[in-house]
Image (cartoon, rainbow, N blue to C red; front, side):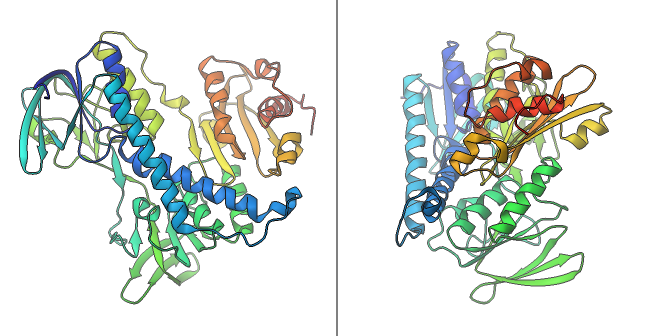
Amino acid sequence: MMASKYDIIIVGSGPGGYVAAIRASQLGKKVAIVEKESLGGICLNWGCIPTKALLKSANVFEYISHAEDYGITVKDAKADFSGMVKRSRGVADGMSKGVQFLMKKNKIDVIDGFGKLKSGKKVEVEKDGKKTEYSAESIIIATGGRAKELPNLPIDGKKIIEYRKAMSLEKQPKKMVVVGSGAIGVEFAYFYNSIGTEVTIVEFMDRIVPVEDEEVSKALAKTYKKAGINIMTSSEVTSVDTKGSGCKVTVKTKKGEEKLDCDVVLSAVGVATNLEGIGLEDVGVSTDKGKVLVDDFYKTNVDGVYAIGDIVHGPALAHVASAEGIICVENIAGEKPEPLDYKNIPGCTYCSPEIASVGYTEKQAKEAGYDLKIGKFPFSASGKASAAGAKDGFVKLVFDAKYGELLGAHMIGANVTEMIAEIVAVRKLETTGHELIKTVHPHPTMSEAVMEAAAAAYDEVIHI
């Protein structure tokens, strides 16, 4: 039997919502979480986790396909697309069940249905036509995001698809056009190309992964082209004709108009926030350009109403939502947490080679007026990378020449998403370049490249 009154009600159970619920419970609060679909939200069910499962399948298939490079003979290896999709869905289901367990362990009530804010610190939950009201001292909105839809690229779920459909297609397409080259776009481009689909990436900006350092973009483009992925930058899809058996895609480029034939178009042009129908206007919560306006502790202009995750300012990343959720409930509980430092948020892209970055790019640091020292160490000079057969990529560190502050880090290569946390900690602790050089790294590891890149910035590098 659900209670009708809580200390905190959280609407949405993604990595922002469920993490906030657990932390609130740890702090002694009576908590309920409202979810209209599956616990874990998009991240666990249709985003971070199942995509990584697909990418791992692609990675294993690549290893098998190049087994001879490692002195192993394998005959007749082939990709089982439906098997890969089935494994991915199984991983997602397991993670969602894990969140169910955590809710029970932490005595958090899970309310099934669509949550809507009501005046007087109340949430109305609708399930199968029935509406029930719950009240709380504090309400946290964590409704997340969905695939952004462009007017000239209407998603029909069959021939023009978004990421949810891309990871659950019934049949592997022979040809695919990916529109957008952010994390979602390049990850799916890698996955489908690696299992034999002919992939074309269309990017409006002048380079792929445009938020990354320019050298990283250049390195990924080189690897992708070598793998047979067609890349069209400074280009725009103006229309898609879906009348026939496939798609006829019209692309506007610098050289003129081009026509592409494919089986399916993946729209990967960004994230839209889920703000519709949740009662923000009814209770007077202020928004701007599709985002809820909040202070440093995620309080809206309405007393007792908070918002976290993709629906507020900052990058739409799972780990950001989790951090925001923890800060939000700690503040509600009177713990006096520090505001989140949005300048020290790591970004990871799980294509192959992987990309990881934090802080200023070289260009941004120059534009901010810093005098720079740049250190770069290629994985081609790494013993561990050579042994692993993963010599593509590099670590690039950007330092302030005056004080030795590490302004940014940009990595591309195998397992770099596991390496970036060191840089985040180093920047949090305000460690200097010389201190990083003197931090002994284990040998042989990929992470040695961080120490070597720091040394390269100060002309002390050993292995290049």
